[in-house]
Length: 256
Image 1: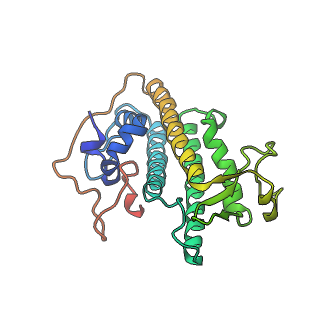
Image 2: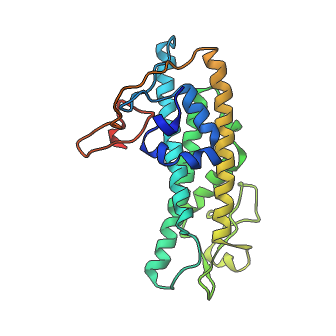
Image 3: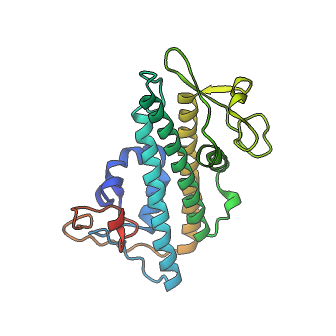
């Protein structure tokens, strides 16, 4: 049976402990539905018709994209990108704002790919974990709205207005209804606390989504199993630049 530690691509192998701890359902889905028989070639899964094979390939691409974005957020959290600022210089402040935008860009990318992956398995968008939908809504303010107002304490702690969770929630900040001056009267939260709360809720939601995927895949396969085969040498998809990534999209992963 395929496993990420031995058969995943370089990102999946580097993230193996993280995956096992926080999103173990990712490995279950990968092992039963994707696999990697070497040179970034998706494992054989006999008796699928053309449409099922195409859906499987598309699913693998969505799934890998989810992992990449989740792992990118992990790296930001590990590097303490949202903790107290070390100075009040404009470059430091802008770095914080850039990272906040990047965080919510990844959250939006995750939501889109979770929905797309689920749709291929017959899981409707309304069944996506609630917190992912909340993060996607909040993303509108950060990505599409005007600059988010922030407050910086004397010790460098950054505070941001509490973000609205849904359109009908009038207690939080929303770019279409609020102005910068509203930060004075609205509830504010420490940015590091907000990001940590989002991060761990995200991990739980992603694992839950993969649990739903696993259930649907089991029904879809109806006893059909991946055929285990391994090429003797793993090159991870050698390209002109050396290495490519993505054990899901084996035909075109050089763009990753």
